[in-house]
Image (cartoon, rainbow, N blue to C red; front, side, top):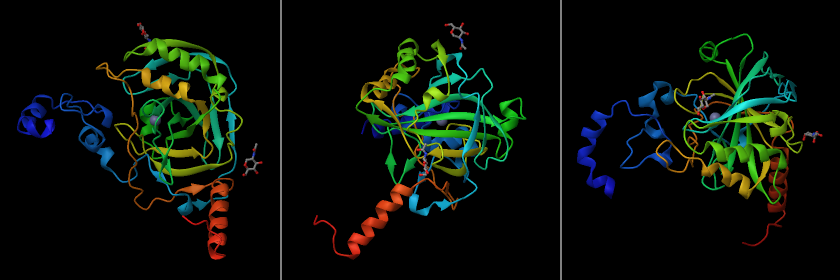
Length: 306
Ligand SMILES: *[C@@H]1O[C@H](CO)[C@@H](O)[C@H](O)[C@H]1NC(C)=O
Ligand SMILES: *[C@@H]1O[C@H](CO)[C@@H](O)[C@H](O)[C@H]1NC(C)=O
Ligand SMILES: [Zn+2]
């Protein structure tokens, strides 16, 4: 209603703020005239193209691809010190060591550049990718670029220049102690542009053993923030990383540049536009087993009364 009342003022305001920055839907209000996800193509034309990310993964439409073999990681065990920063849209950690991923039909070796996360409000739905419509509380993106490039700009000009490994989180009853340093560090970077040193971390430490790294989805997409460059080979792992509610909520204590809570830092899912999502042989096995059981019991008239 408030928005409608001031609608006649809008052209004036938009005109005077034509360089307005992009923002997430949670930041859009009458007072802030930043461009929410439905207007990102005004910030960068690529955001309106047809192989955008994230997407909803419909498991029964995924195609089994035997070439999606296990990955080979190097440097993922290496312990390093890094800077963790509130960049105004997320929390980002640079990766100052050489860590690579290859195999899994990636074609060539990619080196890790940074990782960051996307989350909801106080542990509510907040992942970028969804699976059969389910949105997880948070999603980790470990961003890699082809090893042969020295600059990110060069990798972004290659349609498969970037490989992002995406991991979901789920709420668990016990806390994940391997995340303590990380979640404690959030306290020091509540304000936009705040940074702090993160000591003695490794990439492996982010991914607990219960995540089966052979079960994943693959599709061609884009960066999920403007420029939305269509240069990303996406790998989304099926098994989520457990964190307890307190750990998930810690991310909502960060602040956007205007001082409001940094929540809902995800782009809504984008049209698949005929793209195929491939799955490795281990992925969605449990899901399809459940479907088969359900259809058998339905056929036998065994389904429970509603
Ligand atoms: C971290 O913040 C300090 C000042 O607060 C600044 O001098 C430094 O350049 C920042 N580092 C990074 C990596 O942003
Ligand atoms: C990962 O999943 C695959 C396929 O479901 C299974 O064969 C394998 O044993 C699992 N590996 C681990 C470490 O759990
Ligand atoms: Zn991301």
